Amino acid sequence: MTIAVRWQAVQARVAAACERAGRPLGDVTVIAVSKTHPADAIREALAAGATDFGENYAQELATKFTELGAAAPPHAIRWHFIGRLQRNKAKLVAGRVALVHAVDTVELAEELGKRAGGVVQPILLAVNLAGEDTKGGVTAESAPALARALAAVGGCSLAGLMTMPPPSDDAWAGQPYFEGLRALRDRLRDDLGRPLPVLSMGMSHDFEVAIACGATHIRVGTAIFGHRG
Image 1 (cartoon, rainbow, N blue to C red):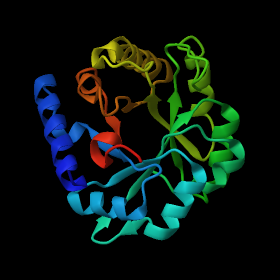
Image 2: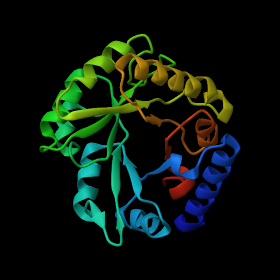
Image 3: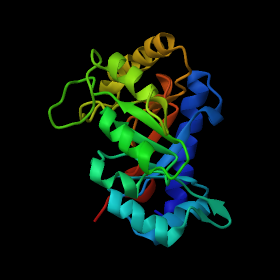
């Protein structure tokens, strides 16, 4: 199956999920997770209609950014950094991406703001709702204080929240975490008195559930690019 065919299948799934949830299709941004996939695969996805691409590794993103450019005619690429980012790698990411999805310290946000080259870098607060030791992100209890601190960092703009539920073969197992992130976002929005429009949640196997729970950005890799060899 080609990338173009997979992309169309994902688009159909997103459209059906939006219709079931009573949401317009334009509410949901599909981020094609291109980590470890070559530039040619990204070009195929671009030709099929994808515009947003997600990378997990700072050096890989920098290499692809150089090779493909911020805009590859006739389509413009919007890059997203979706992995855990070390402060010393912030310079490879800041100012190059539409969103940094997994910020969980003030220090990282400050470094991104410093390295963004005079533009404002949008960021998301990563929340580890399940308290998994293997994942970054703050607890729901710690999120309000960190959100207030991130909102005050110069050079950055807090745009919303992201989460990843524990791995499961059951797509619906993520529902409590998706609903929990939306509820937390609503509380933080009221607390901060500012819009937090982005909810980054849901992947290839469970993004329909995430859309039903309010996801605005879904991170889809395997369903678009296939399994990595």
